[in-house]
Image 1 (cartoon, rainbow, N blue to C red):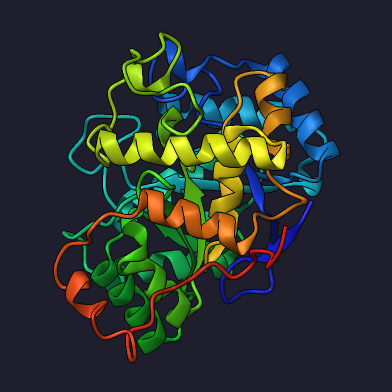
Image 2 (cartoon, rainbow, N blue to C red):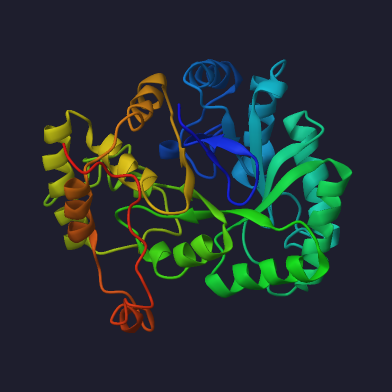
Length: 349
């Protein structure tokens, strides 16, 4: 397994991270999966054997049950793993203060996560979303206190826009508080908006990217094709915030090229799609989910090799879309606004 530094920190994480949204049913029903403790323990055994020691969860996944299952499955081996969890969204309770990134809510959320995970600390604690109501000084001073107390090792954020992340970094710098070392973001061949602003920001500010849904909720598995209905077991059957991402023709064109490259490389379509993400600038790790051992082991095949420069270029071209303003205008001035490019592709087959 390859390990990379997580942003501007000394922490090294595997390029593949195990996402546990499916533990205890995840955030939905059916297609999300319903992995319980015994099966979770077996999958974690397999992951650790492969060098995957970074596990991702959130207090909102099954209203905390995902954290509980993960904590029980990790019993006796907490010192061998890294755990990342998230807070901000409403998980338990209906009170007006049971949501957001206020000091009040974050303290309660962290204590709840530690209890459910059966641990005394979290390695990476993410804000699951931006709270525009709470002053960022309150948010970041609270997170800094978590780090100083030892209950959190590093902090990160998720689903922030560029100005929100930059404002957070600026506040941390102003007061000498802990800064976000990672941004957990939605990014794949089927959703490349992350490249427009967040990727250049990550490069400039040395914020590592932890990618969620690198297969775009099953769009890049090869099961979604022209003229075919969405499979009954697809996560796309579950309503989600990414239903509107991308257009069908671009997706189909991308899958056509993935087909070609899978044949050329002897890999599966998902493995090729994941390998493309791993070569993108700022990417420290990608989160994958697995409902069974077969899916888990297939994901491991995305590492240990690289697409060539020419193969990456074919995928880039197939998945390209016209960005919104001002990004399309900035791309006409590449002398001073260079576009981030793949950094790991081999130059020959």
